[in-house]
Image (cartoon, rainbow, N blue to C red; front, side, top):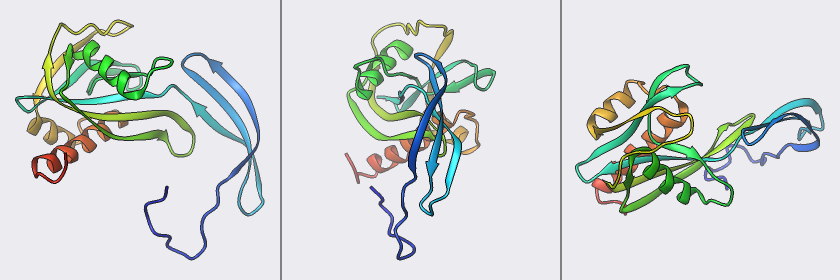
Amino acid sequence: MDRFPEISGKPLEQWVTLRRELVFEQLPWMRLYRDDVRLPDGRVVEGYLHLETPGYAVIVPVDLEGRMGLVRSYKRGVDAVDVQPPAGVLDEGETPLETARRELLEELGAEAESWHPLGSFVLSGNYGAGLAHIFLATGCRILAEPNPGDLEEQQALWVDADTVREAWAAGAFRQLGAAAALGLALEKLRRLEAGGER
């Protein structure tokens, strides 16, 4: 639903997909399609790319001392060791919240008292890609040693929220999902602390 009033009197129309061809597939990670689409003015664009990758959850955990849980690990997309909130791909049949709970336990060995959904977002407005489900998890406490499994070698970090805010404002987080999740979480925390929201 569009939450913003229309700027002009004419509503905008959606594009219509006339034809979709699978170009590349490597399951469970990726499908690339070539679409032929009709624009609202009747023009047809052939070969417009559409990318599908799995949905995933990003969790910004905050413990009872006001520290945020982060993970330091190598990330292939930036080809470097980077810091980000815990995150993971939705397993088949799993809801985003179930994924978030599982990933928090696996990557930080923690559970949360309260969960605050912050929204779901596509990675690319033009090409699609995975749907990111972002959560703020408050009242976190450590239950066990982290056990991320997979291909990951990582370190769990619990960092003062003010330090995270300063790093975020300075552009220290290089992954879009991490930067967006932290920004949304920091704003939600500000509103919670001001007493304006639950």
